[in-house]
Image 1: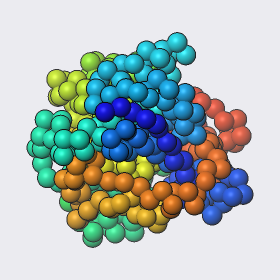
Image 2: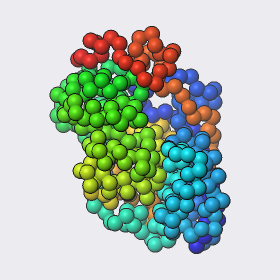
Image 3: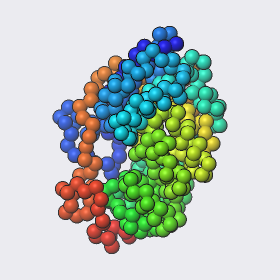
Image 4: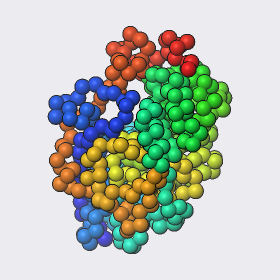
Length: 403
């Protein structure tokens, strides 16, 4: 069997129902969506008529160009030699520098599609190729920033939620814990830069200790590894990070130095199922759990995450936006089966899914970057929103760090 071609499918999609996430104005054609989220899928064709599907993240519009650049290196190769092709891509990209999530995103979609092909060739699900299945269902968490949304999730049987905490984190967590009681786990995402220095993060996580959180996510910028060590020493609370880096080399320090309790590689840009399996093994050796990031991803990456989490012992939970853009369920065939707080592990050959190419083509990409919050969001210190700072110390500290 030989690879004969790689096709890409880029689409602009609607924003999920996240009350706390506000975006600046976007291009006119994207206005109905209220955001600049893109999904990038690809298909690898072979001379035996078997096609594999994958999904890429990490700046999708740029990643699409990277895939087209890599394609000539893969055409004519045997798609079942997955590790060999991953290494070939890594060497090919090396001369451009450490490409991070752009290179990782390109390798991810290709790698994912190769696993899909191999599963179809052998007539087994991808989880079977990864060592077999430990569990039939994967627990999920969803997003809530209001009492109403949190109670809605609870009523649907979802047992964990995550809120965003860039502007008023302590009061928000207190409000949500009071509303849902002890029956639901709560996590909070502080979204990294620019609103938190290590000193501020240390103070904040100590304030959050009484609420027994599932984790505090991205408390500081991902490049400030020393800062994670300060936070780890300052408070007794689980820390989570890892969505903004790619491959075992990007996640290595967080894991080997045990700076987090939960590692969160993004299923669309971590380097593919090949790398995710290796990251999980590294984490297992340090008693670190895995909860893949999936906040902005489409449904093909979700399928890949289900196969992975079914097969690894240190799987914790999967992120899922339960009230995502309506078009999500029309993009994928079949739609994942959710019952209450979990998703069923697919059992079809390969990944067990496909995209509706005609539906995807109805939503061409128009833009893929945005400034993350408006001034009214309260993330930046008062009067500094227009400065667009990457690092900033909090002002109005008495208000910010108290309930």
